[in-house]
Image 1 (cartoon, rainbow, N blue to C red):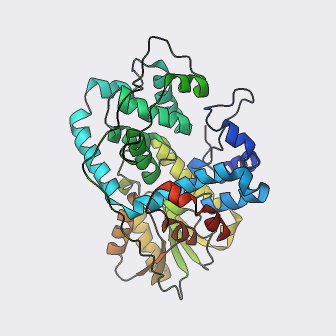
Image 2 (tube, helix red, strand yellow; image 1 turned 90 degrees about the vertical axis):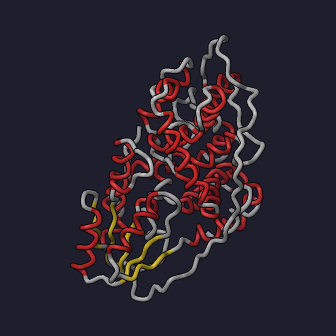
Image 3 (cartoon, one colour; image 1 turned 180 degrees about the vertical axis):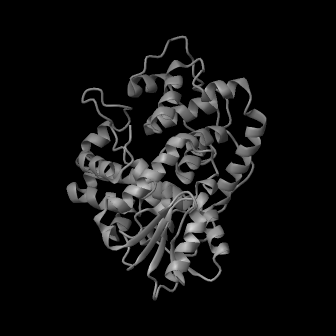
Length: 392
């Protein structure tokens, strides 16, 4: 379904951004546009997730085509991704607790018949089984299907939300620790306490073009899940590090185009990923191949990087990184700030193994501007979107 290249990402962008006005508003809840035989949404998320295309560039290009009043809904969805990331940075324990709970559940439930049948697409719900198979085949599901899927997983099949979130992360090409974890919590009713999402047959039939047997029942009257722990927002410290004489940068796969959106002048670039340490989930080979392909394409197919000396490594990441430092006698390296997920631990290991290097954290202005409003609910965040756009 995806070619995992910069060329494809740009083609999706050029094709869809003119449709982010009335077409997106009127069709986005449908899982597919059967009349025109195309997807109702942009399919950009597997690229935005790793910032092969950045949120700020997508927003600016969208507004160069249509006004904010016409594209407000589309732009809000872009900012949802930004909001979720900021919200989780304010409350990092939420993700740590999810991983801990998931690990305990996998120990106890990984061999249960109900769970095993569900992840193999062998439930009594044919349309749900089709979603499972599509997710595994394509690494992607329409957002409305994801909501139905999560609700049925939790309230009809009565499986733990943590295992559903884990299943998504293992298979989604756009799987994001913040968006995925917090969306599953929202469906369950514990993200916004007392508010959950219930999948309803009529809604699925209408927007998913699914024929559901009248004998199939979904739990459309379930009550919200509950959790005993409360999470409180911590302040975020975006101190600006010393960037004088900074000519070398490490590019993580979480922020592939950091250089494009910032004004630093770099001579040396190191990128790639240590897959052995990219392991908070058992990612499928499809996900790993996607990551590898877009990383290579980012530097190979973007003219921006033709004047840079770029090293990309996947097999012996840490050794090659140290050799890269020693060969060029590098004393200072920029590290783009990374959010919750694997890269924080990868950074820790890089810093520990290379004590002679001064690692300097670099922050995107886009993130700094937005995340200060992400410590509360989205509706509080949403009122600041016009102000955030004016700063792009």
